[in-house]
Length: 121
Image 1 (cartoon, rainbow, N blue to C red):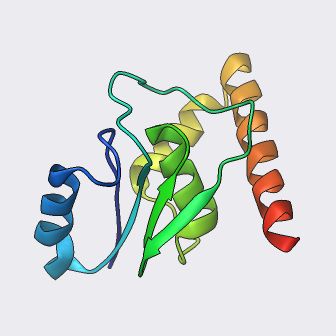
Image 2: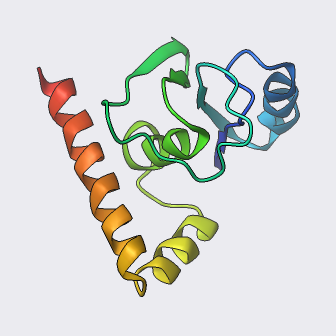
């Protein structure tokens, strides 16, 4: 089983390390977390600069964005499996009905495409 671990306290947080150790027996762990503490950023997205993941080890990345950016980048670009977690699929289905959510979906897709183009250079 492939698992994604992230947090809002940053890649160096002790709690994230505890989570990784606890989840390790359950399967293959990928860690994608913000480069600094991001508490209380809720569902904020980074819109004005490209997200740059920095590899910090085997399946371990720090991102100069919000926790939401980390999850989206992990699910859509970094995580080796194209399968999405059930909660992610439910969220995407729910947001399709809202025009504001659809605009956010287009922005996220645009950012994902920009990231892929930047990796081709």
